[in-house]
Image (cartoon, rainbow, N blue to C red):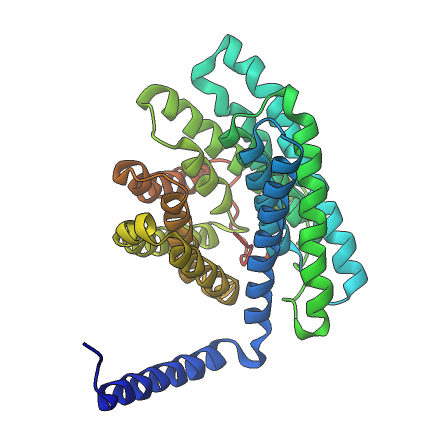
Length: 369
């Protein structure tokens, strides 16, 4: 039975009030819409790369065609996150470098993991220790260096998750080319509408001490190695989630690392349950869930770098619902995102306290992802 006209009017009025309230809040958080534009760019790059990868795999009957789209979309998304230049030409250059870094990480993983699996399959994730080190160490080169280190690690994570081998190097190269184009096009179109965050300062190295970036790299690598050993002993569900958390919570000081651990755990503890609550909708209405995940990534871009907790919550939600929309319906596995993030964060904090602990705050603590 159709609703009366007055009910329709009330729905429109209520919806208008809600949209107006949301718009006011967004304007307070993101005056000028600069971060919202970047968030839309992230989603656009992801979608373009995923569609182009799927089309290429279908048109040319590429073996492991699903992995092609996943790699291209992941490279494009996180490359767009790490890019932070104000000029189109510089942005294009950095996005090319970031795509190349992701390709390098994926190739290294695809070449080494099968060898490790042959000899010691229980510790195959040990290849990720290199990426965890570069996440911290390459911050010495500023914003672009930090992005390259992160992209190398992202490439490793995606290749490891897809189970790629040395036979898939061609697929990785194609994914990188697609990702570069898919990430550059939205950045060129967004142009001066974006106001990137300030460049990451390079800390001063004190006499007689190792550089903060080397210390951060060693802390992240130590955390990753410890998690690999724990996974071999305990059989963690998705140990790469813990490795990722351990690498990215490391900051330029002990207090900064503690703050990042707290915010990452809190954000994930909020985002994962909301994502799990959406699981029935992900099964029945995957398109709606994908749209909600895109909105979550816009929130992610808006929250960085000041509200790391909100960013982590938005990404945790997006990850859970997209996994569910692509066919992963195990509550146990999806919920593992929460407790393995907590485990990785605590291991990262312990590594920061033991391995060349940093007591200064000269390094920028607002690193992304």
